[in-house]
Length: 241
Image 1 (cartoon, rainbow, N blue to C red):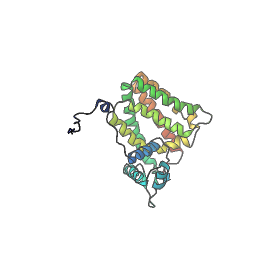
Image 2: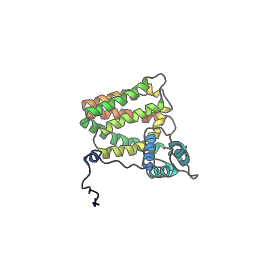
Image 3: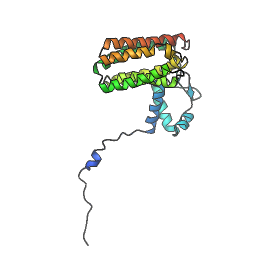
Image 4: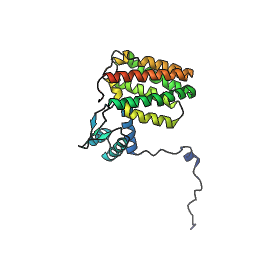
């Protein structure tokens, strides 16, 4: 009877190496990413409450990954825990809003100038797609506010990602986690703002300037966009004094 031993594997088969490294994403990270997106896109409003259990049931997961995700967002001051253990999107004061707006003008203005210098044709294609999505809602006789605020967010971030500076994009994401819910006040409570607020025109100017590589003009269009929205949001009287 021959004594056969198992062959020794000395290297990884070529077929496996072609796969590349797989990203290990936990349920907690996935829930965190989904909640972040809702906050940044303005789909959760200041003062809106939710229970951990209701979030878990809606997403079809156990409560542990939801608790993990919420804890991270609470540490970022993007959510807050109430005495009854419910979770709430923080209310926004006028002073806090003005502070965030001033920081956005500086950081996002810089990002826009960098995007104008570094954007690729592929970046421009993505920007055009989201600008058109926003414009479609602005021109619609029955605009969908949820789609408009998401298209607005995606348009802006298509520009910021064109900088090629992931650290900068991360800083902007941190700002939008805090300011995003307030964008409801601009587009959701007043759908007419889509047609009359000037955002579509500012987006057109912004895209044209980025495409032309004109950083100064792009920054001016972004400033007009942010300041126009900020002025309207303050006029609604929904910010805390």
